[in-house]
Image (cartoon, rainbow, N blue to C red; front, side, top):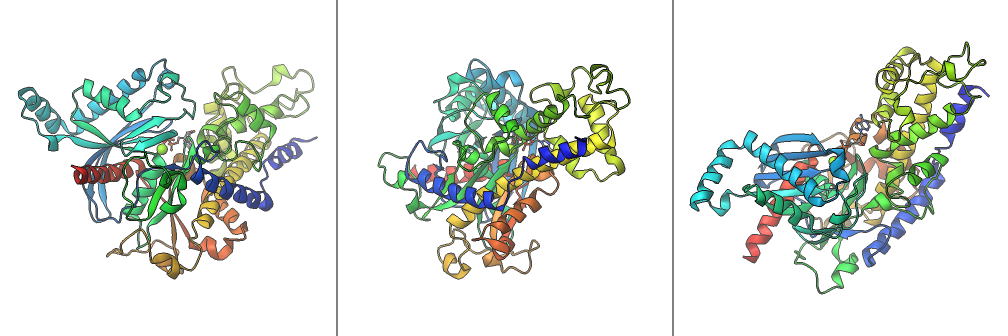
Length: 523
Ligand code: ADP
Ligand code: MG
């Protein structure tokens, strides 16, 4: 068999057709409902205690930190109150050894240290002034920054700034932290450094994205869904409070504002269909899962997000490479004589190491328009130790990478479609709007999609390197949305997807603001 047919065979293994999409959407809706009613379900459907989305008029100076999966970001945000903001931020990679440290203190003291550095660099006067006054006891409560803590792991939230870690994901594994209040862990380390910072709100990155998009998005319609496609994947959406029966039927829950009739729910959709009723399952998916730190869980995430797509590609390419009859990454002139002497793979190549291929390679493949795939070949050579890549090799990598990226986007569409359908947003806007979550806004701008009346727009905020940088991700999502009967071409046109740039920072600031209000009201 020639390389081209082999490449096609492997690419076809990643097909996820219209019927598969529709079946998965039904299952997603079933799991959404189940998760709203009871605990311990596949979709956790966690109530966030945030009951409204912002309308763009919010004001003030706030701090935010974001523990994603790859980086730690610290920022301060000035909300101007006219849908705009200014943001100062710093970003450091999280050291690998801290992700799997023995104790949570190692990780959280590192985080507090980064906050200290940030304050010294960007808010020096405020910081040193506070420290000085603190010694004489003259410091004031107002000097303390309210901080929104974006923590993008499953947490059982029990109050606006209190939440117990349920489990780690995305390669983190610090057993001692499971079950602990992550806000308290951070506050303890902040206090140890005497920083003028109060952890005011615990924010899932999806909720932050939802809030940030709703603050900045044009038009009157509040945002329905905030979704992350970064290291991991997850989404939070605006649900009707009376459907969240596992919360409303309980007496012993933290205080929340019931007046809006809504509750933002963090789906934790990374663990959608862990039992694989509807998800695709190639040999590469099976191997990736078996060798992961959490086999059998986060199965949806393992087919969609940045942490995993590169590894799926690696396993698929390795499958071809390891077959001596398939001429991938081999010098064709002498391949018949001695396979090992003609390999083009250098020692230490990422192809040979678990997690050795980054998902950015899929984006490079999808974006390479050059003749003979020069960019792909150069990247394989420079970054992955695979030299003298032929045009046919590059075409193989491109085709398989495209299939993996396309499947990821189509799976993402399953979650989006289910939430759009289940929240009833597709019904004519006039009946839906009467209890809309947002007051009307003054400055209505238009953001493309001019043919859809503003009140019919279903607004979705997204964030994460995959959706931001993978070429054509949104197009693939939209194609799949159209294939779902309840949505179709008409419904798909109403869906507006926008990047919530700096979403985690702005969103966390907005929730810190809301948290401040709640605290004031109860004082
Ligand atoms: P976080 O999840 O920590 O908030 P990001 O949203 O930046 O961070 O996502 C990081 C993930 O995105 C990593 O898994 C990385 O492999 C992947 N990634 C980085 N650059 C790209 C790119 N150009 N295209 C696709 N994926 C990318
Ligand atoms: Mg992120």
